[in-house]
Amino acid sequence: MTSIDVQNLTKEYGTRRAVDDLTFRVLPGRVTGFLGPNGAGKSTTMRLVLGLDRPSSGTATIGGRGYAALRDPLCRVGALLDAQAAHGARTGRDHLRVLAATHRIPDRRVDEVLAETGLGTAAGHRVRTYSLGMRQRLGIAAALLGDPGVVMLDEPSNGLDPEGIVWIRGLLRRLADEGRTVLVSSHLMNETASFADHLVVLGRGRLLADTPLREFIDARVRPAVRIRTTDPTALVRALARHGHEAVEHPEGHWTVPDARVDDIGRLVFAAGVPLLELAPDEGTLEQAYLDLTAAETEFTAQPQEV
Image (tube, rainbow, N blue to C red; front, side):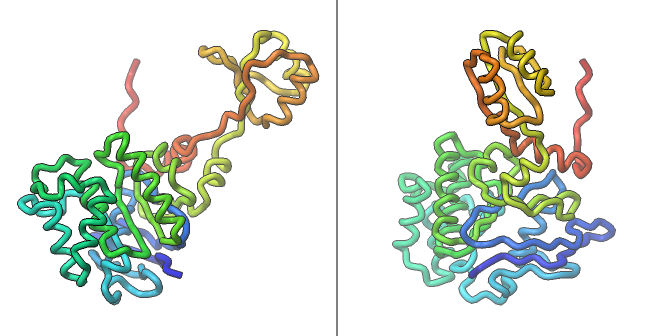
């Protein structure tokens, strides 16, 4: 089983501690979302895992070994940290062929990942002519080149069009379903919620959460029920008799906080309240994330005055 193991990891730059005694494990067979505000230490941690920087203390290993000790690392770990890393004067195909040659990967694999990432028709174009989304696809192609068991991607949706975003969701899901270890850093909460099974959340270099996605949301966002009815008066009376308070919204629906659909459904049915809609008003990852990291954000804008 190939996992990413971070143990008591610390990285200091002068007097600033970018990563602070960090411990977590990324397991195979699931997509782990790596979240945190700007400056939280996500990119530094990924660089430490990949041997691009040296820790001040602690360890970061892949399958129990440091990245530098891996044999044929491109075939063990695929990573995208910077979509601008490819040389602009090379074609997309030549960029991948150079990488493939370092690990004796056949050219046919280059064509396979170009096709898989949707760059087949642009493979002969120079990288400097690529859009940001195309460079992202090329970086992902490079990460997949060695068919690795571990994949680490930093903001892979950046610059992708809607079709590309749907494609990356499916790719991440497939990689996890194949039993690979997948770690994805992102600032896009709704996007992360669409593909992540598990979350690791940092704040100021420290671990804030290491938990399944649904548990993370449910622990921080109050459950509620969304209702629409043709008889609001009857609805409010029925709920009040059972100790519930309904909140009216301008869009025409009502919300019952701290409630479950089954309970509310039974009592409004018993009261004969006509319903047009009855559904759980589930909390979002964005709500839960902001609740957790409110005190951990290093860079914040001042509220706008009205």
